[in-house]
Length: 267
Image 1 (cartoon, rainbow, N blue to C red):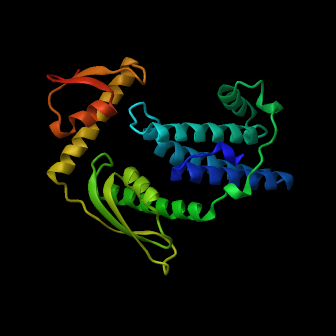
Image 2 (cartoon, rainbow, N blue to C red):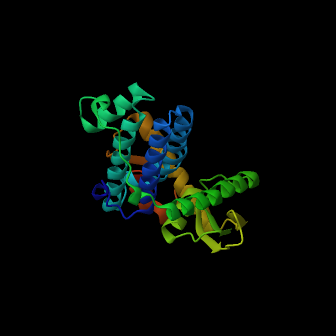
Image 3 (spheres, one colour):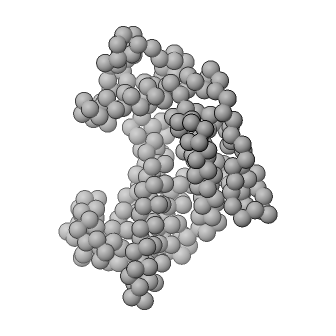
């Protein structure tokens, strides 16, 4: 029911496309009694697409500190829809986990009393899927290069240049930037290539990039301490730190839900 999906976020549009394509594939394979191939398609969707890409890339969007409430709701509604639809497809394959997911998010009696999900051909966006496929190639290469050069992902870098066989939209470029923690992504269309390729990454660390990296380390440290203390996702805390980049004080407070920062030993 495409009227249920109203998000303008490219990640949401992509996962809905992949959802419908996977339902279509698995339905066809089950009807042909090819359970082995069906489980391969399920594994690819659940692990590679939903978990390793969509959910991970949407964590910041659904964080209580998110400043874009509309986008936050899009992400939550999209994920609910995907879990609702896919848990019904999973029911014959992993009955107990499918039951747990479905009853938790719907409040219905049982997934095994629900109908098999139907795919919507109009919701399958092949050009978008191709775009994300080539964007993820850039991400994989960038991560590999960062690791080889010894630059942790939490340290922001200035720029990356790459080429791809398809046009990469601004929304997807922003996703690449967030994933690889590089501020400027300059991608060029090269229709003669068959794969994306990272050409250069600027590894020069300016004072601003160093401060930005420190800010992200501090936010991560505070979030880890919040977990240890068992604070709720919406609780604001007071934090004492020996030092922090003053230009990012407001950002630290917003991202880590900090009420006040004061000088002293970290606590």
